[in-house]
Length: 331
Image (cartoon, rainbow, N blue to C red; front, side, top):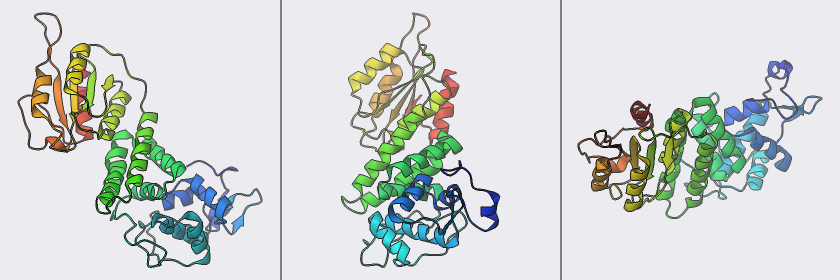
């Protein structure tokens, strides 16, 4: 993590047990900009500063910020959460583990809504930080955490181990809460999509037989898995044509005939959207000169294809396997 807004704090801060803003942010799983904003807006700053106004966070300062994270994650407005954090009131907090903050639980205070926290068990600190930022609808914090996760771990690992578990936790919360938290899921999905686009490099050279077509099956609207696959393939210099959600059969067939891809990936989130006849038909499409005709290799991507098999149809179980399979075909 980079220096604080006035430069990195000196060794004297660490020798006295104080932490830099960046170190505090990593322990809490929030963005440094969020911590600075809480300081400016609500007076949740450290008790001491260096002569150059550097923030030096002591143990009691960290405890207040932990309480602020729990309260806002449980659904309390930031201003009210800050008031309670400064007063030392609100829900009782469990002892923190090193460099991790337990995920917010439903608080005993009458001001907090029961069941408003996300249950993620022993999920990594980065997942919990993303979940808290999503619950707060904190744009700056969520973007910074997503960018940091992708830059530190790479697209495939960040998606598999951090982003997808967070999305699944938010999705479970929405499903068990009626229409509540729909805005949290939409907010998180939108920012994940933006982070993937920011980390998608320019598309490589596109030759017939070397490109990949990615599309959702007709009536399928879940595009994030295909977006991360697009980003991962282009990161490796492989050309991709991404068509997104609910591609009509005629349009998909036309695109494959016109572009002559070496691979076609069809995403289906549920069995109701997976179409085995469509996959078989796409696998029969030919192009090229007579005597050297070629067909695409079709990948059935997503849980909707479970149990559906056809000769020549490939079903990689995860993102990493899909990347390796496509790469082996078109490189």
